[in-house]
Image 1 (tube, rainbow, N blue to C red):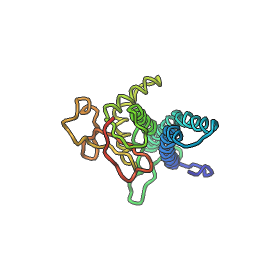
Image 2 (image 1 turned 180 degrees about the vertical axis):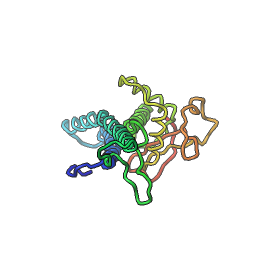
Image 3 (image 1 turned 60 degrees about the vertical axis):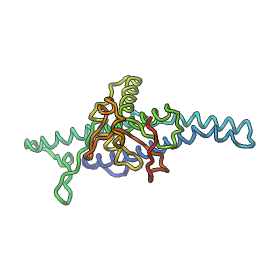
Image 4 (image 1 turned 180 degrees about the horizontal axis):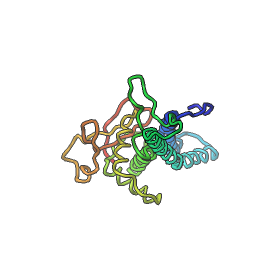
Length: 241
C-alpha cells in the first residue's frame, strides 16, 4: 500500500484493496491470539505464590478488555462494497469502449500480463466480510464448547452455518448466501493454519452434515479448523465442536 501515489486505474485500486484485505486477515488472526491468551490469564495468574490487589485487578481488566477485541464490521463490508463497485466500473468501461464511446477508458480496463492473460477479477461479492464472519462464528462455537481457544479444534460446517445465520439475525441483517460462504471457505482454506477437510468417519455424518458440506479441490469437506498462529505448521485432529 502506498497512500502517497496517485491511483491511475481500477487495477491499482484493486491491488491496494487486496493488500488491505491481507492486512486485515493478519490483524484478525492476531486479535484472536490476544483474546485466547487473555481468557486464560486470570486462572494462570491465580496460581502464583504471591500477588497484590492491584496486580489481580489489572490481570482481570486485561482479560475483560481483550475479550471484546473485534475488527469493525463496517470497515470489512465497505471494503467489499468498494471491490464490487470497482468491478462494476470495469464492466461499464469495457462496454463503453466496445461501443465506441468517446473518452479515455484505459483506467477502467484490466491490465494485461506478460502472457496476455487479463488480471483476475475479484471473485466473491462481500468476500472479506464473509471471511471475517466465518472466523468469528468458528471462534464463538469453540469458546461455547468450553475450550480455551488455544487448542486447534474441528467444527462441523453444519454448526458453522447455523452460527452464521444466528449472527446475522442478531445483527439485524440477511444471512450471507450459500455461494458466498462456500467461496469464503475455499479462500480461507488457502491460508496457513486453516483447514477445511472431509470427515474421516463417513458413517458419523448426519443429513445436516451432508447438506452443509462444501466441495472444492475435487473433494467434499465437512469440517473446519482454524489453528492459533503458533500452531500453523502442524495440524492435529481433535474432537468436533
